[in-house]
Amino acid sequence: MTSAPHQKFGFDTVFDGAGDVAFAAMRPKRLYAADEVEHIRQRAFAEGEAAAAAAAASAQSAALVAIAEACRQALPKLAEVAHEHRVGSAELALACARAIADAALLRFPQAPVQAALEVLAREIEAAPRLIVATAPDMAEEIQALLTQTAQAVSYPGAIVVRGQAGMKPGAFSLDFGDGVAAFDPDAATARVAAALDAALASEGLHAEPLIPAGES
Image 1: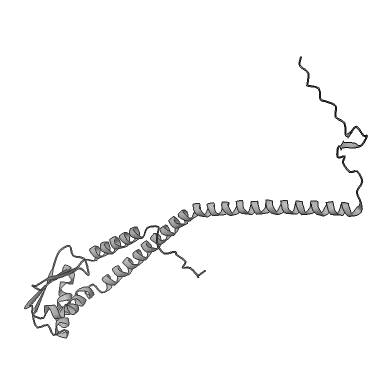
Image 2 (image 1 turned 30 degrees about the horizontal axis):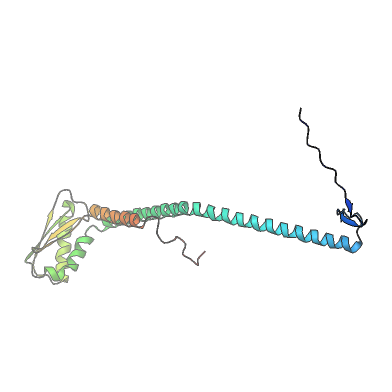
């Protein structure tokens, strides 16, 4: 069995050879004056206030760090949500445009070829004959319409309209010898959709914000 080492006895007061006090240990003060008590109270209050302020500043700094980290993690997700919203809006707009275009072609299937003849008036003025292919059930109507349009644009040549199986209303091809103009509603829709997909893919998650700065 081992015992703890003995502690040497120490004296609170040491006297020298002349009897004077050579060393005296500090003893806690047991009585304080009122002004000393007030001073101690104010000092303790100031120390506590400083400690509380330091703790609050530390907590505030930690909270700001946590908020910054949360924002850093949330921003990519917000960009994904914005991109999905942008893609959905573009697809909805394209679907609406397609529905409107289809309805317009059903109502005015002769309009595309008539517009083409008007636009190409300068290029075809020297062509002796135009050969137009269109939907079989529209050939007669388009023949009459293009004859009138040719007179309006002062085209002197002959116009031959032929029905071609498989062509939808609104589709046509116009051969004027030096070139061909054509329109296919399905192909046009596919090109618009491909261009939209390419634009969205290129834009990706780096598009302009949905809500511009300064607006709310």
